[in-house]
Length: 194
Image (cartoon, rainbow, N blue to C red; front, side, top):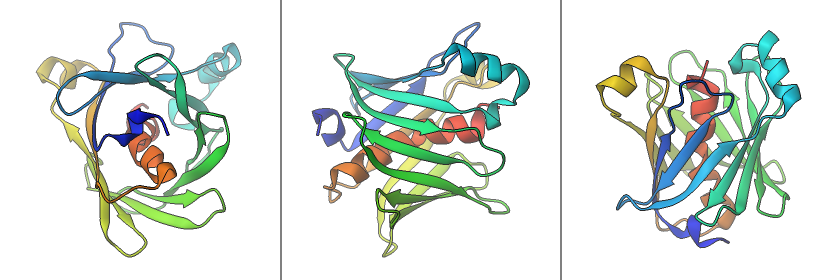
């Protein structure tokens, strides 16, 4: 496992661009040191598909990069009509799990699965879809994703968001740490970017 994922706190800050074809996020540790990035990869075909599909339905591919620019994990979603399913891959491109959006009335909810399709955690948001608790199958809280105030100009005039991801130190499973770390960017892509 890359040492990137050994941290327990990540600040994920979406970059602002006047005209953007893809989303990008900077990742910092709790002390504000830049640790890496999350970069959306968009092929020409996906860009063209974006002309006819709303962003909430478009496929996406997010690469998680360490400070050296090496890809250490990846998230992929295909075209979606209703509920999103995002696949999670390790640095070697092997599937390590997925999470799936669940139908709920007021509060967004996702279920995290391992590579064999077994449920390993639930991700539940508040009614604003700003703050999320991550609990294991026993109901124990193992992480959280919290939206942070980004300043009045950013909040009013852009869709750029900032999240703090926290992982309970008791979580030692590499695949769970990768999934919890990357969930903020995926939630932002699924719920906020349209």
